[in-house]
Amino acid sequence: IYKSMETVRSYFDDNCQTSYIYDSVKEIYENNKTDWRLGRRLVNDKFATSYALDNKINFAMTILSLFYGENDYEKTVQTAILAGYDNDCNAATCGAIMGIMKGYSGLPKHLVDASGTYYRNTNRPGLASNSIDELADRMLVQAEEIVRYTVGKERLLLLKEELEKIFSEFTKEDFIYL
Image 1 (tube, rainbow, N blue to C red):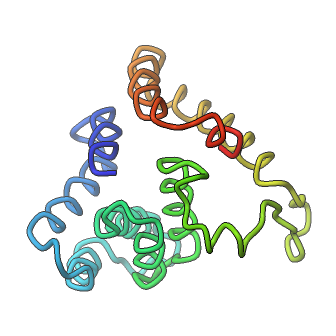
Image 2: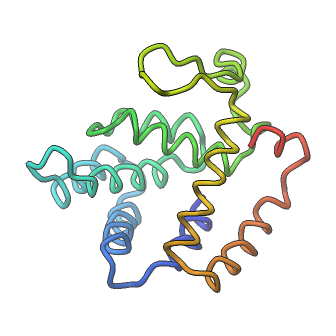
């Protein structure tokens, strides 16, 4: 995950806020790789505000969780939940990133068995119930649009090459569920 995060980081201008937050959290992690709670406190001290809808702290906690999760799906999601703030969304983001990185066959079997392959919406008006495959297809289209908009065509081609290298390690079964 570390290498992939560094690859994604390279597509952002060094002077943008995204890079600043990423670099700051990375430095906190590199100076203290064993105690995620201390890392969380340092990230909190640096990025927390009194503004309830501030997304900087959530981005920082997501990055923190990816670092301290050490490429382990459950540890990453657990860290995101325990780190607080918008922890349901941060944990979902971390879970999605780890799921994309590991592929369906790389997910913990006991979690896959317990969760099934269908999302049934019961509480959100206007949000459909979908299979995981349908949700993954929608996310892929949105991700491509975001990348196209934010990094431009030239960088998109470079990113595509990097992603192809990463995904070349997966089996056909993995792509069925992505």
